[in-house]
Length: 110
Image (cartoon, rainbow, N blue to C red):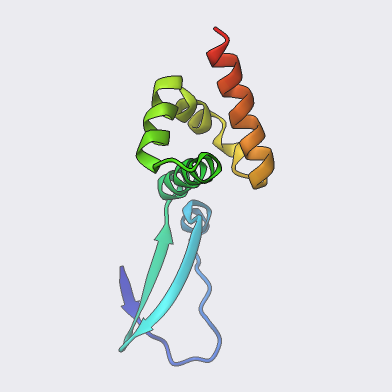
């Protein structure tokens, strides 16, 4: 979405609080006479998190990302990560790996 660029030195504040609350991350870029906003949705942040989890695990095992994604799907780890995104995305890499390992150990023990 583009809007005309203002000439005032102070950035205009949004008046619509509902729009601000739905916006996870926003960056404005001036392109010619328009300001283009890049808004990252919640779904995009969750997809980025899942990708990060797969990447971290693949690097730990030195295997392909597609093999890890397939394994996560088979074991139900992707569902676990989605269901617990609000908590898990705040963890550091080591803690996140620990949570994934605990989940997988429990699933493999069934």
